[in-house]
Length: 578
Ligand code: ARG
Image (cartoon, rainbow, N blue to C red; front, side, top):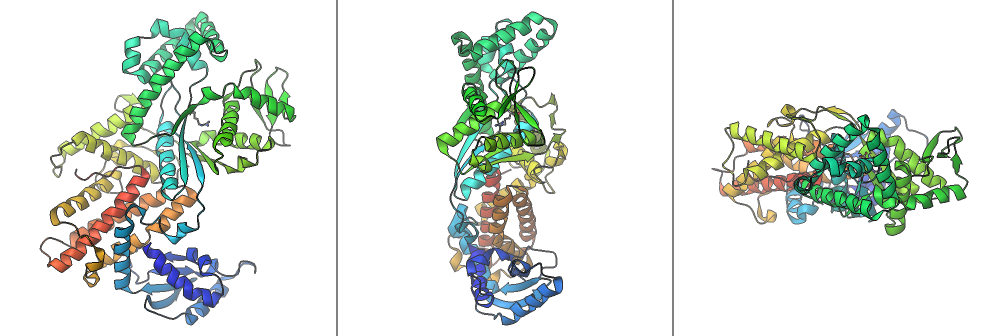
């Protein structure tokens, strides 16, 4: 990785001065973000992070003194052409031509691995990671929370996989519970085989709404539903076979919808799978003396001395959501022993997961510490023109049709072979970028108008940038080897900024991989898009002398490569024309 070569070189010198192994210094040397001031500094050493952490905190003047001392001992060489100091930093300027050449060559050589082959990741042990996400409830609403879980989980899985971990993607369906009692009881009355085949999710939802309503007026239906659910729990053949069909047709349709999103799962699991194992969990809790009974006969577990508790068994002996989660977690650990197990849901379930992990710990499972809940905030206002979101399909259709309308009215739109697919990709990019811009845990207000703007910090703008770079390559050709280009031709400020920005990509990936927040990558790619726009304006390829044109093409090619890599990590499929 480009940046690493320079970090290593700086670390090697520093290592002698500070008497610290160079690998311990790498993470304290960071590439400087491009700023309006266009400072001629490429890397900085954050001095406070390399000072002896044993001696109590260093005062500012102390750090400054150390900064001066370090800087005085450093020497310029073939790589570093200038050394200066800032507030708590030692600043390095890299030989400009070497920097340009290295970055462009590395982007070319490493392709989709650019940034990942970095030293920042080289010491990372390869892990087995299980990511559970999306997890909608059959026959119920697929709300915005499920959409967020889907795109966030997909991003986390993509990123973990990209940096070399072994990832298993699990969809844990809400495929058990009273809604199936109602569906079972009401299907012969409100259901229709044809519709079930054609549009299973929609139909099951409709039937559910109808039976549910009818049950409020007619106590008989409630009883029938309870009966049916009891039969299910007792594995009655007929009941199970109907339920199985509901589940199968639903999954088939989910798979199609996820395909539109570019999302796949290695496993469709679900609450139903753990109904029996729940009894083992309850036995285990009982044996360890953790299961207490309430007056009414429900089973609870005390979570701490303070007396907070979690109900794990209904008074009739049946399991609850958390009981099934306990069984599922234990089963997954037994079967594949992942190093990390990640759950992606909205933050309203945070306390559920804290309780889950706590009970696992109480049961003596040390691996509970390897479980992690990634919570996200609420979205207001994600509605289609027809109303609220019920199905994932509704959001995708809305994004696609609105994009199509805008494309039709925009003057710059091209004749496309496949306008629908393009609109779908643009619409999805718009939704994803809006969603990933802030901290995952923050709530935000969604507006179609806002997300579909072609200027400003949107997914549409990002797609537009990619398409523009692609068409530049189509028009002006590509450069097959970066080593031949004359880097002296890339000294315009717009070119230098772009190179400097490309240099930092590994640090951005690293940051997102540490805190699992996509916002670092999003803002990086938006800045990249703006830098590309500025460069595109100032650095024409057409009409330039061949040597200059070639150097610029090479630069734009590198920008497109990194842009596409980053977009794919976020779960966006870049478009070539729009
Ligand atoms: N189906 C649940 C819901 O829609 C989400 C499941 C989350 N995962 C879990 N292991 N509890 O709220």
